[in-house]
View 1 (cartoon, rainbow, N blue to C red):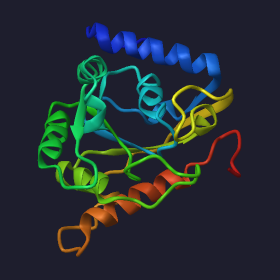
View 2 (view 1 turned 120 degrees about the horizontal axis):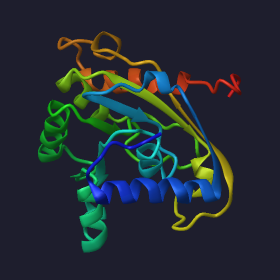
View 3 (view 1 turned 180 degrees about the vertical axis):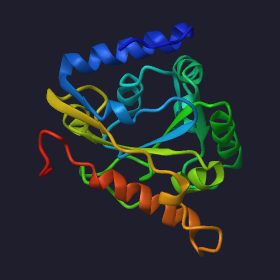
View 4 (view 1 turned 90 degrees about the horizontal axis):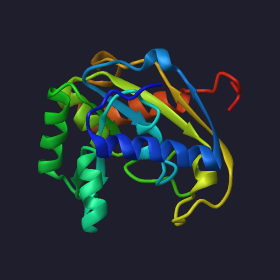
Length: 214
C-alpha cells in the first residue's frame, strides 16, 4: 500500500503510526474493496486514542479528522495534527465552525473520519450514538463507509498514554451507505440522531471474515 501524498508531515505521521502499531500489534485489514476515492465519511467505533492514526495508516489517501479542541493546546502537537487535516471541535456542544470546516473538506472531495459514539468507549463495547455523525452525513449527502475496529483497546486502553501490551488489531471496512440508507428525511423529528443510529447499527453489524461470530 502506497500513500499518495506530497504532505511530508502527513506522510511521516502515517508511516510512523503504522510502524508503531505493528510493533505492538498484529494488524489485519479487511474490506479493501469498499474504500472509495472522493468525498466520503469513514464512520468507525472508537476504542482507543490510537484509532485515528490507526485508521489513517490503513488508507492509501489523505483524509481529514475531527479532534477535540484541547488536543490543539500543545503548540507542537497542535501543529502536527493541523498539518494532518485535523478539525478542532468543542465536544459536547454544537460547534458551527467545526461543522462548516467538515462540510468544506467533503466538498473538496476529501475523506473524513468520524466516530458516531462521539468519544472512546468506557469498556470496549460500542456505546450509544451521538447526533454529530448523522448531522454531517445528512447535510453533506456523502456516502458513509462503516468501519469496525477490534483489539485497539488491548494495546492502548482509555486512560493509558503508552501501550500496555500486544494484541491482534482487526480493521474491517464495510459496504458504503448512501443517503437512502442512513437519512430518514427532513420530516423526521430527530433526523440527525436517527441517521447516527443507522450508521452505528451498520458498524455493529460488521463481523470479521475470519471470526463471523464476533
